[in-house]
Each structure stands twice: as structure tokens, then as C-alpha cells.
Length: 149
Image (cartoon, rainbow, N blue to C red):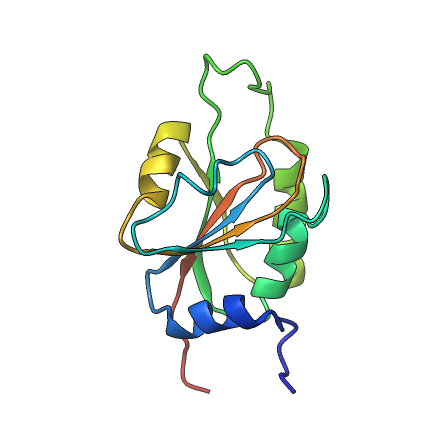
């Protein structure tokens, strides 16, 4: 039995092969996961139903399994019809999760189109598609290094 909260076999397999600077996308329910991903990335669909599971739920579990050195959100273009006048509420939830896990990480938005380009990289190893309905909920994680015990 594993000590980590992560027990999904495919996600565990891909993360075990990932190394420093690998990218993991936790995609919301609106993200075009089957067509917007890196050339060697694997897709795991956890979108059971609208709202199940959420990006935040996946983030909590991944924090128990891998070191993370950067967290990028998808920035909101000025001309986007769904642009909010403030940070999306879900971003505060992510900040709380990171703080509770003792991770000193800042959410760094990158523009929507640059976000797609970042996902379309050779470093992108995994997309976890969720059923999250929150707007602007996508997270792109950069795997860090495991430090000596």
C-alpha cells in the first residue's frame, strides 16, 4: 500500500517517470484536453460529472506525491467574454491549499495563448482532465526536485 494519498495507477506511473521541469496540467471541464496537449503527454480523464472531480481536489492529492516548483494559472485576456474584474475565486482556494501544505509557491498567471503554448511543449507529460466548472480553474504545475532527506 502507498503512503501517498495518490493511488490512481496511471497518474502514479506517469509521475514516477517525470523529472525536474516536467509539466502537469490539471485541466478544468472547459479545457480542450484531447487536442491541446504536448506531443508526448498522457491524458487521464477524471471528469466523472459536472463538478466532479475538481482541480482543487486533484491539486491537494498531487501535493502529497510530487515536489512542485512553479504553479501557473491561465491568465484572462482583456477581450475574453469571461474575463473577471478580479482574480477568479478558485485561485484563492489554490493559495489556501498551497499554504496548508506548507508550500511557499505563488500562483503565476500566464496569458491564455501562452498557456496553451506552455502545455504544447515536450516537457508536458500529463493532463488530468477534471469536471471542474469554475472559470479559469486550469493549473499548470512544474515538477521540482526531490531534496535529500
